[in-house]
Length: 308
Image 1 (cartoon, rainbow, N blue to C red):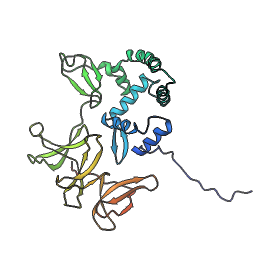
Image 2: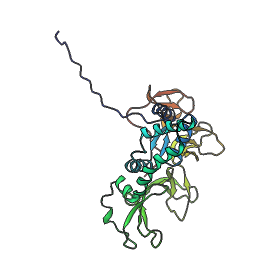
Image 3: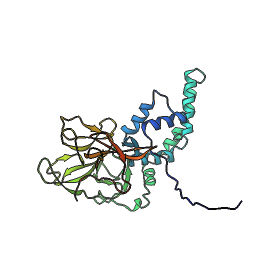
Image 4: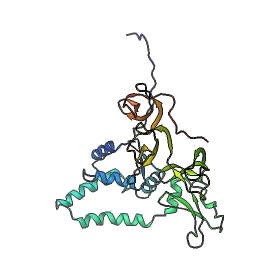
């Protein structure tokens, strides 16, 4: 049969979507990891230890989380894999049913694990995870000692080998800290310009005269509350560090869970919309005042109203 026409089409392989809490639980169930009673605890550990951030209801790994994953998988490949975890779940069930001795299971696990643990070289592992091939040539500018990577609550950093006994020198793992970005936003305490700084929970605004003035405020979004006109600012929950957006006025209870965009609603004309996404629909917007929904613009996304 002769070919009448050929219609070419191009398709690029796309990465799988980021896990939400619901999709992560489904994946754990599929892999045989955990129980309904432990799923919440598993997710809490990921957030409480700052391995992930929850943005627009999706999990994104932090730098600390990526480093821990690289180090742990490299050092303990037999433990940090899905097969081991699933098998251990089965053995725990057998222990509960009296089919296995808990002492034997513990001995079988801890023997090889103790040997691997004893051979851990933490600085070398952190250096390998961050490709610090030139680390041996680095010297402390204060005392001349070698610099070595260490782990901290906010992630890995470089410290003098004599720290903290005789030297206090430390610095960020990837060179010196970036210079704060200047804005036109006035400090609420002294009215001096504020700068964008990086904190434990993400970016925030701090006074440019720090440490003389310690004024801070949440990052502005350029969107205003439909209830009382107060500015919508980014905040994070204390327990999990989950980002949400609320009215800056403490007496107002207005909250949205998705980042707001400076976009005009085609239905009511209000400027302010949640940036939402679904598997079926893709990216779309939802008016924070009337709830109307429309497709997201394809070319550009709104940025916080900052100067500098």
